[in-house]
Length: 166
Image 1 (cartoon, rainbow, N blue to C red):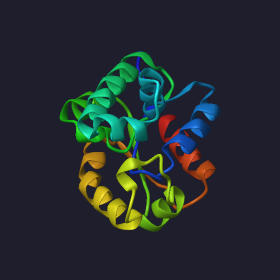
Image 2: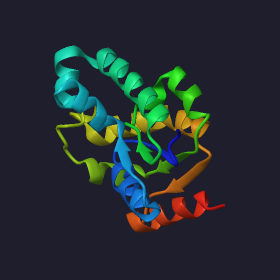
Image 3: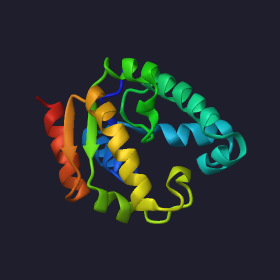
Image 4: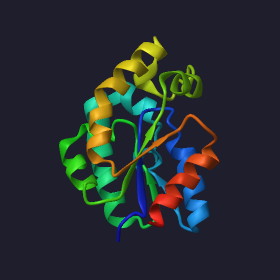
């Protein structure tokens, strides 16, 4: 079993929104690794960060992504930092991965001052820029498709679906 497509990208790139649209168009299920982590831990990701720290969260994330890659046959959206783990990047190379490329302005406007994104508290634009710059090479490393998200989510989803049909 393998996901039809795995979506990666920075916070605010639209992975969940676009992922649900792609799944709907393909008539398959949608899964978000961040939701898996919250369900398994019984608490929000922001609470996991505060109570246990980022290393603990990243360990939960690594396990959740590995399990989802092995058991989900629909559309899978990963948290923005999932690609930070080298083992996860190795696993992703066995899958069809789409990198949702977002501009800083769009990402900042989409995430705003969202308190559920613990890495973005404080200077949202500055932190986002740093995360995007650091992670871009990792997203590009695992992706077989890069899709710009500076348009309507339906257009982004249509491009992904079209690429899957090739």
